[in-house]
Length: 530
Image 1 (cartoon, rainbow, N blue to C red):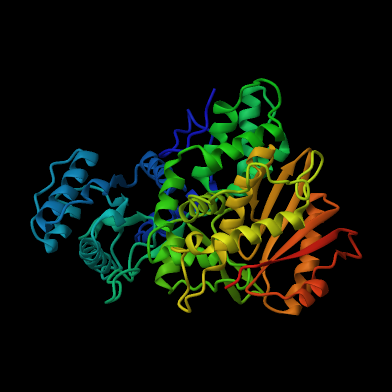
Image 2 (cartoon, rainbow, N blue to C red):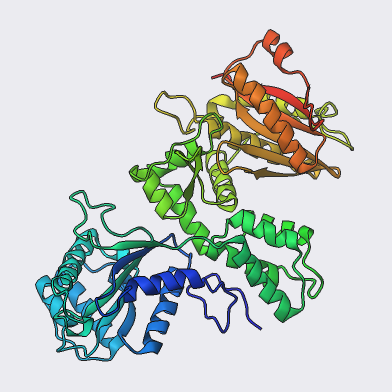
């Protein structure tokens, strides 16, 4: 029986996978060319890590070699990452070619000699070459390789009447694989490789995710209930590495009751472990990149609820985060582009990471003999009083709690800091009450919710920053619809505000009942005293 695999290219005989035929067909057509006698294209293949770039191109190479019209190879440049000299990087490149094609290729010491490797002296057929991890090379080497490949491409184009195998340069097709579009991203002088086409490896569709689990069910005889498959896809948005990691957790690590159907409750256990306790190279890499300056501030601003972050590919910070799988983008009205987190699971891991980094210690929650009956009873929680306690705790300990908090250019504390603080405080305060607290992110940007489970009851707290009355009214309706989606009769809408007087509290802290859904929304203002 096959297994799910989340590390490295999958083996189709051993691992569940999505065939991705349309994608491999496109890459095949690009490399061989619409008219193979004329020549193929030079392309870049890009996507964040663990998205199946290498596997897709391996399938293409296998198909090309089976047909026998070309000499096709795939080599990785990862080991050249630390090479600093031109002579050594050229020697490394030729050695890799020699090992793959099993040919005695000439040593080259200068860049303009690179062309000689792809001539009739060395190859009897046109060559299709795929360079994996190409962007592991230093920028200078990337540009020099690109210059030479461009020269080879133009040599071939300057011989339009000759079949591919009779051209002086036999490099018929070329693919450069990387986490970014590889060329022109960081080169301030512009890309010298302006002949390439770009092939992006997208995430899995829900259908592809569903089919992988259907294959597992057929082979194992165990049912994975549809809601679990849907939640896996929703949490990962089909990111291949993360999807298959959850596949490992569901079908192996946490599959304690096999062959009984894998239930939604079982998935809650898996999800909590994945967010809080389990290492995964893919997600650890994402967290590491998001936690570095200057990218950290961009991520903190992405958590804000007041305003969305406009996405533009030309913004170097957003570009870096996008290319490394930290963020994605969404469109509104067909013309407006906004940054969003790559998927809810990534957002949850980052929320957890920054919450603990900024608030490693929250201080004493309450006195040993303090009466908590106005806030916690055996049957329920009083959310307004719970928020009052948080507000008082923040005021009392503000000086040391927020001493090193990240700030904007105007020296105001980033909005997300208060979300992190409330989450950490709730976790600590309710820890002794046998309650569970976790964040949810329904949209990927501009919306943060905290869910509390206590005494067999679910409480939803939607977090916002108060800006103006129109936004307040819109937030009431949005919170009601969110409560309806959760199947709750009541939700709390928590506004963070720099200052609020008693008159404003009396006016705005009134329970609102949504006409269409009947859901009650309880507005609560937390005075952050800034």
